[in-house]
Image (cartoon, rainbow, N blue to C red; front, side):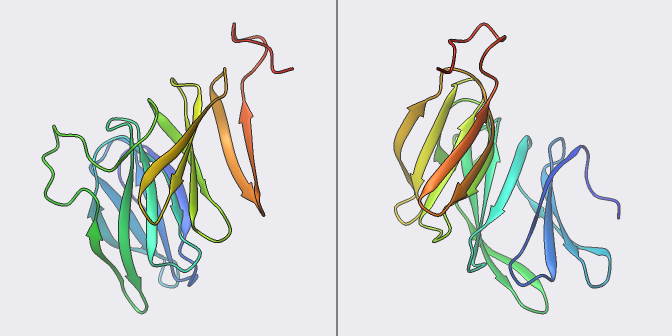
Length: 173
């Protein structure tokens, strides 16, 4: 299935019918209908959108964007078709900040099982942003001391891989 330039991440909608692919060098994300193995739509989103995760109930999708240093959001309705009904960057000029501000160069993200908390690893800020999804505000930023890799929320815990030793960052002891 052909998608945009430099596909970077994929997430399955909880209904199992649609997947969203981020295309780092395209100004759109590809929505894949996995039942019919085809691109169902291309939804406009700023360049350098990297990762995507769906809210457990499926009504929202969150994206990291390294150009905007932010988290972008789609409000979604997905039944027989996939529709983005609103975004947190609607009407914002491309040269203006948009979305939920986080550390520099956000890459990986995950949601808590309840969907109330979003965790975002920012590579050049060497940090983890913690976002309340109801208020859409960063509530805390944890300094990691080295670039974060992947982020995973399990129960009431969050796990973050990071480069650590050997990268001229402080040891992780």
